[in-house]
Amino acid sequence: MRDLTFKAFAITNEIDLNKIAVHCGIPKKFTWEEPLILRGEILKSILYKDVDDSQMVLVFSFGSIVFINHSTPNEITALLNYLQSFEPEIEVKNADRYSDDYSLHIKETESIELTDEYVVVPKYEDYYPELISTVLAKSVALEKTEEQLGQINDKLETMIDRLEKGKLRIGNKELARTTAKIIRHEYNTLAYIMILDKPDITWTSSSAGEFYDRMLEFFELNDRYKILKSKTEILYNIMDGFSTISHSIRGLFVEWIIVILILFEIVLSLLGIAGLLP
Image (cartoon, rainbow, N blue to C red; front, side):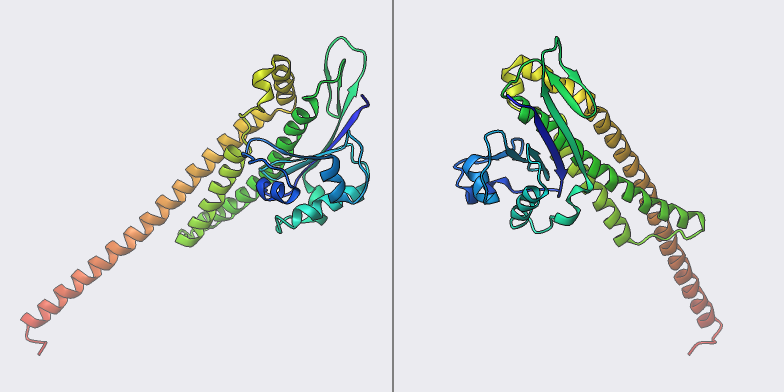
């Protein structure tokens, strides 16, 4: 078995695997935790060229895609254009914005060796392509959501600057939009990418489970997940603070209106008693 090369992309937030499977003639209902694997004749029909047995494309429901042994940019572009026909929001030209490269080397070694660029194993196992692809797919998806979290932080910083300048009023629409971004971020990251979920093979094969856990630890997926979760909780606390200030200001405004109306009514009553009103 020759070495394998992996190239992973995070291209969107969600991909409907079942639509693609139906178009490819794959008689299977996909759940969101398993990837759609394109290979052989199906991959050949998409790329309009011959492919060898080692070439695969794994498509994940949380918006990532991993190419195995695809060395030419034309093959990658052709596949991305194909996926764009199902998910129009995919930007093919900017597909490499969140990407990563990795390799699997098979050599005579006493133990598995993990590095930033490759993993060395003493013997090839059938589960290696899927497990490595899954870790890479989740890693680039996290990279994408980490940047989105930074954009939300920039928005909150602008709102904080306004508070420091004494501009205390924050519109309900602005609060709702920012809160929606935080909720969407949490859904995309903490729920949909499913960092804590494992591929089925890891439950039936102890060696597969050990390999996957080592990959997770090396790519720090669990740590990155915890950091994102804690940052998200901080964002919610900040938004609660904004909401409390906004509601307090509105409540104070209403109280002043009530006081003014009461005073106005008292003045009218006094003027009526003094006979100054008809």
